Image 1 (spheres, rainbow, N blue to C red):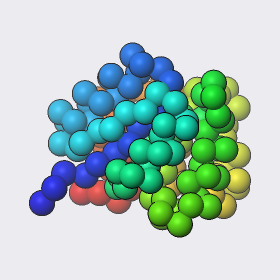
Image 2: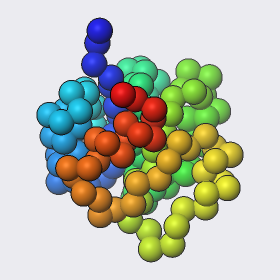
Image 3: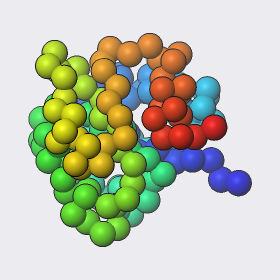
Image 4: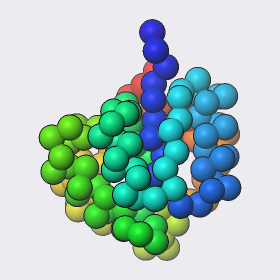
Length: 125
């Protein structure tokens, strides 16, 4: 069976490296990285990941705008999305739920626990 594929959309390169290493080495998953929202939307449509980890605050496009774009595209509409956020204010859970977010992981997070958090939110064993 092929490993699960996760698309990480986040503009912080160092954080992306940490997340990629954790998810690949601990979780055994394949991780695709996009450092921009627009590239992330393209990768989501062409690579069809099993899930997306999406940063809420990015310079080119807000994460919730990206999420809306994913949801209106019939190709990416059903891909589960987990939000990553460093916002001191919690993400609007009602709005997130309406857009099909499966969960929110606050930054900073414990890299060692990240695989378990992602797997639990996605229902992966």
